View (cartoon, rainbow, N blue to C red):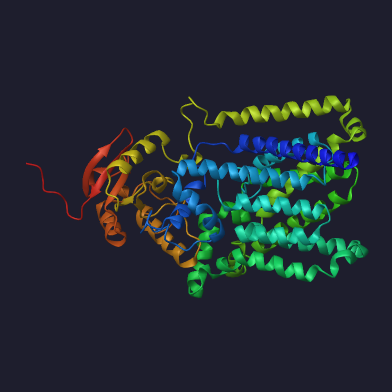
Length: 537
């Protein structure tokens, strides 16, 4: 009896330690992601979620009515977004996301790192590396959207893979694909590549699970189909020309910083390559383990996918339709996360080994670890500058980075309180949070680009009509007013715009066909009219 009691106490203590680690990791992640709401993509995904949970909200808005690419996320988060004000829904969703990421991360590093200290250091290094070593701009820790929860499942699946539980790893990757087909789908492919590598180098290692694997493969694919199949049908019914035009808009004009290697910022590519080199060297220093060899196989699989994306991009001059059509699948997203994770684990593995620390650092291991902890504390202190703590003023949501945030919020508050509920607005090109802040429709937003082919082509047409003087997406104006009253009337006729928010410094604002209803120091609200008002006596 006493022996059983000791085992029970030990199990409870182990669970308590795991829960404590998850809580600290969640705090580390929250430190990096706690920006004022809405964050960069929250104004996109949470307005979509709210519309999915309450179709009457935002009814008739062009973007909100376009087909959904992340149905599972909207099904799960839609009721939350519809029940709470969007700011509150964002914070609840963020905390759920950070908790899921923390639990997934702790599960991922448990077979890789033996000590709690090393696992917590790995979490802080992962947060740091995610912010500074990505090539294609992928992020994990931040606002509330579908891929955050999918990445949490990917981390959980990695823990299963590194522990040698192949079947449950595959199933969890399938669940990640159900939430986000790109995140989970590439992870499944990387696992297949890792399994092939290990099967080729260690054929005996496959005997234990090969007989039951087909069943789990089918179940995992069925889970993945929940997310993948609806995404594949987004462009169903569109002709080949429309699909090609949409792919070009998506890859070349709208999201080239994520998808098109020739558009990647050179410093980001350099940092990413240096991170790969640093990971490989650190991995060679740390004592080898079976779990880390599995992680290495997965990371190499992710890098092979990224390399394949580069090869596809090289074909653009010879076969642009094929190249651009393939590049829209985010070939570089997985490596942007796998490399920071592997780098953090390798660095923590070196730090937890006394002999390696003494040999590499040239100082006592405790001193080296203290120095690393100090550097990570400095990073945490730096991150605290954007925390929206009580009493702080002047903090700007990243979603409002291209407008004057305070004046924009003020003018949106007026619209929310005074504009007709069914009004449809022309908004400045840099605005990303209009629907979030006002509950009103808008003609188009640069940030709110649809996912299906036909809607994306329509989105570009609206952007051109509202902001382009030459029919292209370069050299666009910040306001439709700058293009003159005839263009404003054309947009009113085509898209049903009856109100506008216009920057006061917009060219030709005096010619705007309508009357001013309200203004602050930087923006004015207009009621648009198809015919000019009578001249004042």
